[in-house]
Length: 255
Length: 272
Image (cartoon, rainbow over the protein chains, first blue to last red):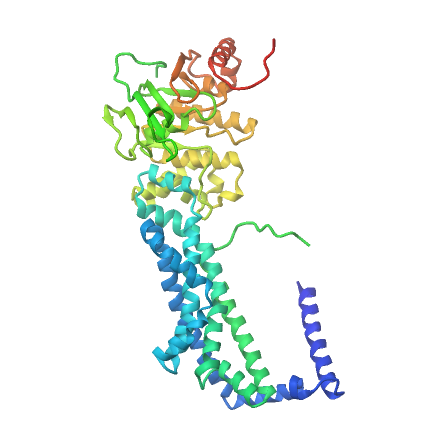
């Protein structure tokens, strides 16, 4: 464990070292690639004047709202489909089509409806998250074991009991996995929204930096976004472990 | 407790000329339909343990599902206490080859499952489940998860789950088929003791003829599909013996051969 971490940290440091050397010895052009020491100083500066934290807060709040709305509505609808074969048959083609198409294609439409601002970015994020959540929940319910359902019925349980005791627990692992995926999807929606039509947030900073050839700004915003994404993902994993203490054995090949 | 059919008492379960088909859209007409059971009749008296043996796929499981209320007869009638079956009957317990333990629940929670469904209060639930599990030797595993137990232990939990509801009738569909032979003998002994001490009525499906003879009061041999009752045999072995003792009884082999002869087993190499 410690060895793995050691290798990872060393590799990162060597990479940055080579990068810094490459700039100083002019093997590569700092205009295109940025210089680690410069980027470091820039980072400290932007942290101190609050720009970075404000932007992070904007992006974080937009993606959280989109994520929470999308996950709750999507999961609820996906579970609901289990109750009605008719509803499923009616809506399934639409759901499949919406899943296949990149939700960002709707961004211009959302822009017209919601205008510039917080809501636009939340809707972009929501659109991506809700479909994945819905499909994952639905597919999860389909994995329920028919014999287990029969067992519940044989002991006098009604449909609600089957849903509560068998269907939902069976769907839960897939729902949690979809939540982990949806963190990324939610951020994509938000960041693209910020690219398209915003004057706030990490995505905005990145595109602004690119537009003004300020490579340091781009790198700083991207790095912060990566950190944000990892932290959010970590939080979701913790929630996942709390919802479902995973005591199943894994099938991963050792060594 | 007496063995055999008590002729003067009304039977607990009655199958009267029952027919059950599974029609697929391809074969929808009359006799072309896929009949699992046809003209299927038998009785079970209270306290009897009946064995059903027959070739694979002959409709034995369908029989249990009919009693359980999970499916309905297309012809004839199935009666419990003289009443036709309407949906799942509260005092019928069902045990399958698959233990169907829910992997996300603990052993105790699994045993409580039926009680939970019946809205039994938490303390009573836990107590009843725990005492049954202890009686079956699983007292140390109450808070373990199914994947931590062996197949034989899991079937014991399934038995506890079934018995927790105190059913009048227990239906067992090859419950020990997936367990190794040695464990099977132990589980058979457990079941024999439970059945003898509780005096419950049971229908036991198995392919293991020896198992049928050791556990049952009467064995019905079914024909191949569509199944009817081909013949029936009352097992008269002394009541209180253990599974091993019953297997060693002189009459055991006679019963075995008689039943084997009755079975329509497809295929096999003819020796002549």
